[in-house]
Image (cartoon, rainbow, N blue to C red; front, side, top):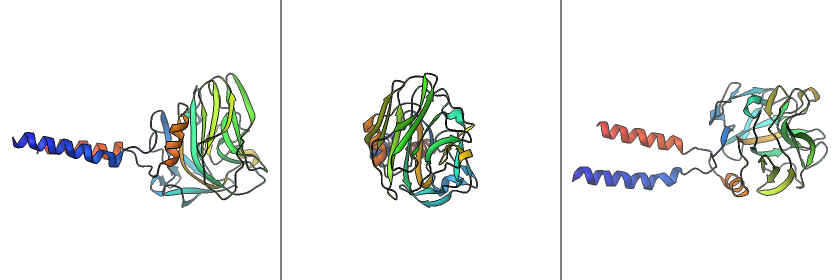
Length: 256
């Protein structure tokens, strides 16, 4: 009787506690997540808290306040976080997502790109001398480097961007609303040596100037409602952590 009652109480406790740790952002298809929090940065290593693609900080991006906890401030003069290009090579669909807050400048300001060569691959930036996003994509089915967004932005404001590709159509959302769409096909080709958060075409000194936070890459195109869910998230904690702890606790109780 005691054992049965205890089990009912435990199950009720699990069901009651679980919503507290319910996942606030989408993890289906997630292959890399860099929160850019100070707790996830050790020296020059910027931890991928979901996958195995830790970043290598170059040019000393500075810790700063972000949208969720901390973010990184990029100086527009070489600060970047380099990522292995193998993360995205060959993908037939993807989403690149982050929060950004850019400073006005006449230069190209890459939220996500790569180098040191000219960006023949995948990336998005604030178009030089403008306040719109430009999108780049190269696949084995073609290339474009003239994809201009339609949303007029203001320097010094935080924006959420989700750049998606489903193998047939490129769509990008700024603050959850369509900014750009274009038909395209093929698997991702990247001619640069590395991918980068905050940098693109290093040889031409094209680096982000401003703040970046909550960078995620998926191997599928998020739907608009999923983009909006991610934009509305107030925590970057992952449910698997507390659930693992709960599982371990249940194991300990059974042993005892």
